[in-house]
Amino acid sequence: MNFASDNVYGVHPKVLGALAAANEGTAPSYGGDVYTAQAEEKLKEVFGCDLRAFLVTSGTAANGLALSALTPGYGAVICHAEAHIAVDECNSPELFTGGAKILGLPAQGGKITPALVEKTLKGFIRGEHDPKPKAVSLTNATELGTCYAPHEVKAMSELIRPRGMKLHMDGARIANALAGLGVTPAELTWKAGVDALSFGATKNGAMMLEAVIFFDLPLAEDFAYRRMRGGQLMSKSRYLGAQMLAYLEDELWLENARRANRLALRLRDGLRQAAAIRIPNPVEANEVFAIMPRGLYDRLLAAGAKFYDWMPDSLGDAIAPDEVFARFVLSFATPEEDVDDFLRLVAKG
Image (cartoon, rainbow, N blue to C red; front, side):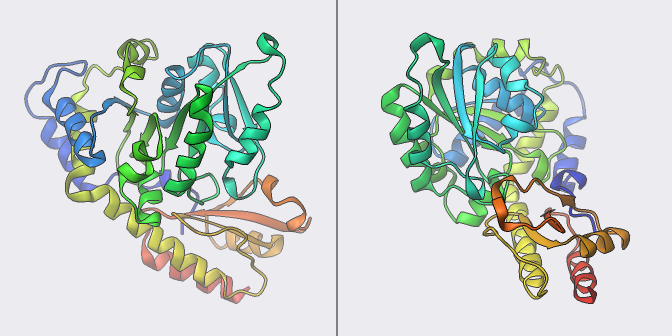
């Protein structure tokens, strides 16, 4: 009963099979292989537009490198206070951008709004004494399992674009967001004004695979140098390209996300049956957050369940000192019986 993260589960068999097939024979190195070229073409097909895609091995690298193309070192990137780039990447965005300020804004539900960003931008009144606002980064799905709908993304883009700012999307769980929202990849990204996307695959069935995707093509100029300087140009690049092709083939990525999301809803519905548990946020992707008594939390851990006591910063006074804000993450590979077994434990108190 492991709900600690979607990272704890392994690689989808189809992706492993693609890696084994790519392992036969020889192939050009450093991105010159046919797999890498085909992966970019497949991403163009998936998103329905021209784009540039650069394969990397981690979400941290994807975010830091993407932001380095959007802001200079004297810039500022606005995001949610609990965004991965703000609290989970050990200043990697600051490193790759050469010192840009990551400005996290507290907001409920894991989402920042155009009104909140506009209010923040009005505070930049000291000219060169302030960092220059250069980008906004939206996490989709968010760190609290909610999702930005296309109209919300578009509203943010329309706010910042006249100010010369760019819009980045951290899509470590973008497949889950798309599955939850029921919209197309195009509708949630470039059609809504996203300039650069960190496209995640590792959490959803790949081994180690992310992509930096530029819909604003001029941003990709010199990005090959940024990737190389960041240590993310893999010599045996065919293994990244092969993963991406298998991940996207026959919508495997969306199939995986739909299963994880369905299990999240199943877990949510079961937890709602317990009088001592509250679900404060909508479950819109593959994460469930629940407020529960600490005693129950401790008993569930003692029974072998794995999940996290999460940061309750966005809840304010909604959580009591003897309660826990618990996070559960469902994977494409989570056994259904694990959800059922866990809910039986919860029902026992």
